Amino acid sequence: MFFPKRQSEYKFNKAYPFLLLLTAAVSIGLQGWRTLFSNYAVHVVKADGLWIGLIESVREVPGLLSCLVVYFLYLFREDKLMSHSTLILGLGVMMTGLLPFKMGLLTATLVMSIGFHFAETCRQSLVLQCFELDQSAGAFGYIRSVTAMSNIGVGVLIYIFAFFASMSATLITIGMIAILVAIYSYFMKFPVEKIGGQRKKMVLKKKYWLFYLLNFLAGSRRQIFIVFSVLLLVQKYDFTVKGIAILFICSNLLNTFMAERLSRKIDDLGERKILVLESIIAFSIFMTFAFVENGYLAASLCVVDSVVFSFLIAIKTYLHKIADRPDIASSTAVGFTFNHIAAVLFPIIGGIMWMYDKRIPFIIGGILSIISLLCANLIKLPRLQIGKTFTVK
Image (cartoon, rainbow, N blue to C red):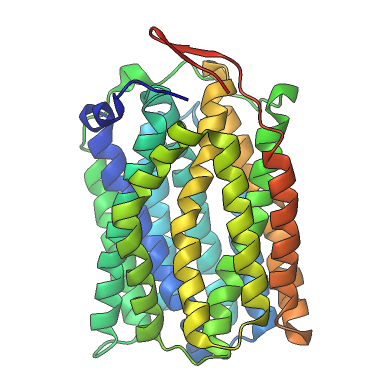
């Protein structure tokens, strides 16, 4: 397929500074929490695999509530809702450091997760509304690069803090950073003329069924890998906080330079081919992780998975090309909800299975990757007209 060479124009969009700043704040909060969580849960909170699985399942419950974002649009403009959500995320990260016991960690995780899932839903919706068809893939990719740069920054911060501060103090500091950035965003200008006209109710349409299913499968696979890959490194290979921080820094260095480039491959190859390729790679990673006996190889697979994750942007651009414009906010929210249906169940189920055999969660992930591959082959896009250029798949 061919798109006009206009991808760089998204960097001149007036919505860009706002989206980049809050993306950085959300990334700092979430990545800080993720980097510290396994070590914090195991060594400070003294949680076992079952408790960790339960907490991770609770963390995904707000993902099911993402569909409620459209009702909050009666109260707030979508850009303001993203600012509010980022502030709530920062508060949740702070609470994690202030409540170092099992129920405290569970409660703080719930608050943090509400903020993240609402902010992420708003961000995806705003990108699809504010950017043209031939710009959204590049915009998503560049935003992912900014996410990676933010993750590197928080990784370096955690590594430095590990020499003289407790994990609790580090979490409190990271939460405060996210809160301060969210407060600053209230004073930023946003091109409100680019948004609006969205249906403020749930929209479930037959024409979007494959988008829903792809989100469901992607969320299931990602959640299994995110939870149990790092847990395996900590429990089986004794990775420390410093080791996990270095791993995330390496992953994000690659993403800083590759995310935008990989996202543009969606325009070159099309959503179907990109998602098929992603499913094949994901299957290989899961099955290798299930039987790997080398900690360095396992860590390398985490880096590869992080880079390939950029290909899942194709699910969002697929929606952009098939959705009616008034459906974008609602469909994004519903898709995010589908992304988290199985994600609520798999961590707790995987936590139970983890107690019997650490390979089982990864084998399940491999099976889901095969199903994703079959579904990706069903993608068919209509003939799209962009200016005088036609795109055919």
